[in-house]
Amino acid sequence: MLKLKLIGGREAVVNLAAPSAVERGQVVAVGDLAVIAKDDLASGEYGSFAVGGGIYSGTHQDNAGTTDRTGKPCFFDAAQSNIRGTVGKRLGEVVKHAD
Image 1 (cartoon, rainbow, N blue to C red):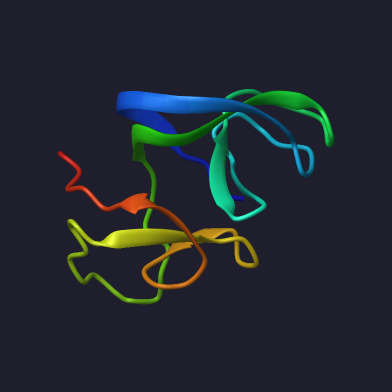
Image 2 (spheres, rainbow, N blue to C red):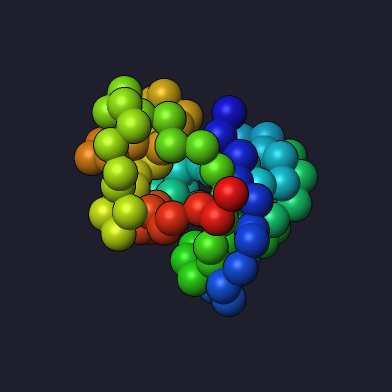
């Protein structure tokens, strides 16, 4: 399960029915969107999901090695529940993480 943590930005949030039971920060696919749950929700329960505008901390889980992807798009692969460089629903862009 891929979970992201908001670290900055100004999120755009919408109210949607959870496609399955979700935990706060979990990334899921809803229709053509990759969205981030803002709360723990039961399957079918309506709640807040972030749809853009935020800056999130997470781990790039592609098999692309350590290639610097800063400024490039990242995608949510629902089948694998991870972030990919080229496969899935667009999630946003990669930014450099300050260690």
